[in-house]
View (cartoon, rainbow, N blue to C red):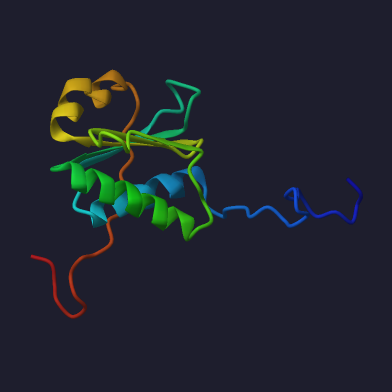
Length: 145
């Protein structure tokens, strides 16, 4: 690479789009997008100290297969706006457990029965939970109770 090159290029010669999101920012954005779709029991786990496969796991529970599908689509759309695409998505055929691999962040969207059966939060119990700020759902001018 010459000194005038300013970074990696795609096969067509264009610049690769690089996301400005840190992996923690990505994890929080995913958690918030799941909350937007009324996914329950959303947990962000910092798994850096217990595994090398990812930095963060996000777990969430849906009430129906339709909610699993729409939540996965919403995560993908939200991150696409930030120029972040999943490396791989599994589970869209049966919609009991969708796994979305964003390299450093892995998203697990479950139906209730599957979440209880696999209990990933117990399996990864040594990983600290990450608190993340929720966007205020209170309209402007009104106070929270």
